[in-house]
Length: 236
Ligand code: FPP
Image (cartoon, rainbow, N blue to C red):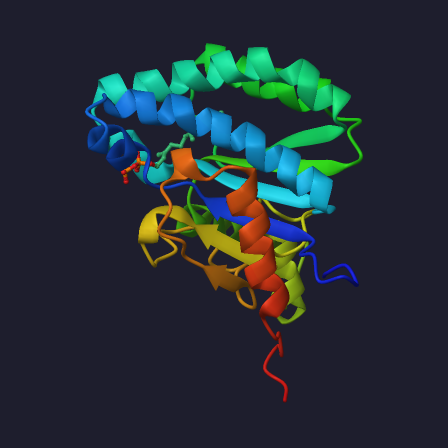
């Protein structure tokens, strides 16, 4: 799944370090999230310019609901504002937005913004921006297992029909190729419930840069790191 010039087809990013970035500058955590939106904008531009076809961003995990209610509300508000402000540019740049994750726990307002951005950008052909929002990998896999089990129970499918492809096709990412390259900013070296099934052969990169400082140059630098990697997929 990669272009001939060693540009990854699919880059997935765990955007981490907004709070620490803000605190280190004596600001409120929320200001880190605001600057983080600018990094989102920059990385979309850099991904498109480099010919990356899919960019997945871990915007809100199922665990993030456990943060103080003020921060959760601020993130939801920021998301709605960003959707309204960014949609025209995304359409102009040919970016298609798709969401992965649960949809049943958002307010009507947030859900309607999600629907709006997906339908307004549906014709975008240059880059697919996948927003993981109320997403966690274990939750995704559990949902997939339930859907497969109910097909078996109803006789639509037999146990012997179940193969890796069955699971892949039952995930939120059914129509999205596996990530080639996963980046987590801020120096933390773990996946935190992100794309666990899909990450099987992904290259990983853990720069110490905090997300608000991860702009186009950092994205380009990450692609240079990827270009040096040798991918063997378990072979010699
Ligand atoms: C992690 O930093 C970041 C988040 C939980 C939220 C990410 C959201 C954005 C960048 C803005 C909205 C995004 C879109 C797509 C419009 P942290 O708060 O965990 O930082 P810390 O580890 O330093 O505390």
